Length: 337
Ligand code: BYC
Image (cartoon, rainbow, N blue to C red; front, side):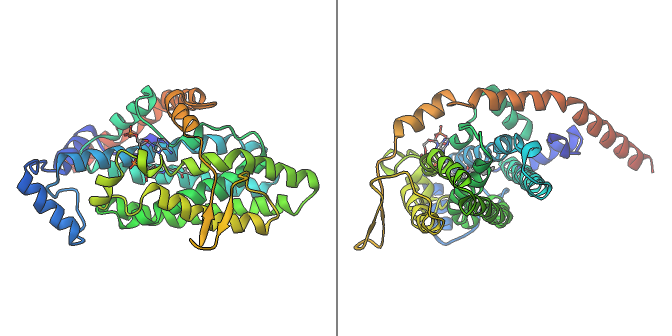
């Protein structure tokens, strides 16, 4: 899939140079001036001057986000040949293609910050770069494809809608289309779970088992609790993030619990209860030990995910070489003409 970049090496280098931001703001007065732009609601564009830390933090978040989209295709890809009907197979294929597109927009947005996609992908393949912990959990049943759409894409939309108003223009614009597509993904997932919940007792149990496995990891997608989040306060000041991890997690819980109740399914949290005073659900403690362990060791599937991406990168070498040779030929023809 990395073959979609048809630019020649020279064109890539020149685009990188043009896009390199002036990181001349690492001086207190200039930081203040930059903060004023942010406070005024200005949108920062690729060629604008920006503090090096702002550039680096965006590059970190956007590239992690891109990697998540690409790795996120893998658990779903395993179900393409086993989807129960032709229609389900087509819908799943379309969803997986959307994820590839999201990866593409996000790598492109990250490239505007001066790092090449090749370098970012190299970090993913070497195991240096992070991606969302949720994709290190296995998806052994068809119900998981429903749950991934309903809960995982549901959590993703809750987190990503505010990113459409992120202070960095190329990221914010990429998120608009991503969110529209994620909204379709969430509905297709909820529809799969609805059919199972209204089916035979065995089918309903399949859906329940899946929620039991995916509920807590979905809550972890929002990142550590606010007290343990290292980047939140600066990122909110810079309007990269608009809400804290805990605020968005709560928003997701409040929206999702009634959806489960409607289907007669149980959220696997004995401490979950409606808090009349807060107008919100209280919930049980999240196992942060599990979250950090999955980040550190890759959980049940981390090694497989990276192995699969390394194999894809190797299998695609000839495609990228062919695309590059074609682009060179076209450029030479154009020059000759
Ligand atoms: N998994 O200070 P914090 C999708 C890391 S794709 C792994 O709160 P921040 C989909 C964090 O990176 C969904 N690591 O960080 C695709 C940091 O470590 P470093 C992907 C996590 O950035 C296909 C440390 O913990 N969505 O939905 O302020 C099919 C401290 O965290 C996680 C995005 O990427 C995690 N869950 O906030 C279906 C959204 N959480 O880098 C579906 C964009 C935290 O200092 N990203 N960490 O070593 C964000 O909104 C923010 O980066 C986060 C974290 C809310 C995730």
